[in-house]
Image 1 (spheres, rainbow, N blue to C red):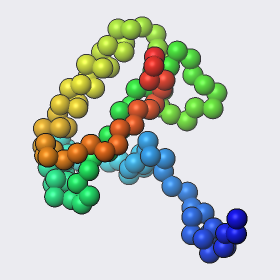
Image 2 (image 1 turned 180 degrees about the vertical axis):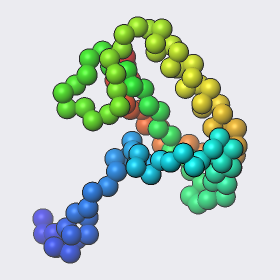
Image 3 (image 1 turned 120 degrees about the horizontal axis):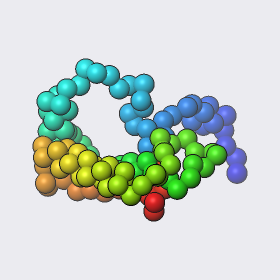
Image 4 (image 1 turned 45 degrees about the vertical axis):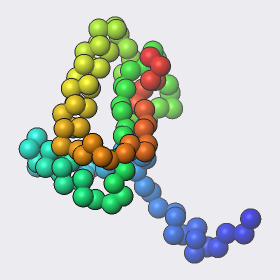
Length: 116
């Protein structure tokens, strides 16, 4: 396969992993709960209209030596139950201002070991 230096140079840049978008260094305390809701509502007019979801499940039975995710060792099922309850509430809160006409076209699970 013949690849030009121009093409190699074009894509030879560091980018965030899909699990880190926007990257953590772009997070600030400037976005309030009301501002977050307003941004979600405003996104209803953006193109493309599809929605991609990333659900972070931070629990693992043991931490892998190569893992770069925000994860922790699962100590009890109660810990996961409390997290899942909070996650469900966050999903309901975030979904409220989003148009029900928009289609979810991507769903990613990550963080720890989702089968935990």
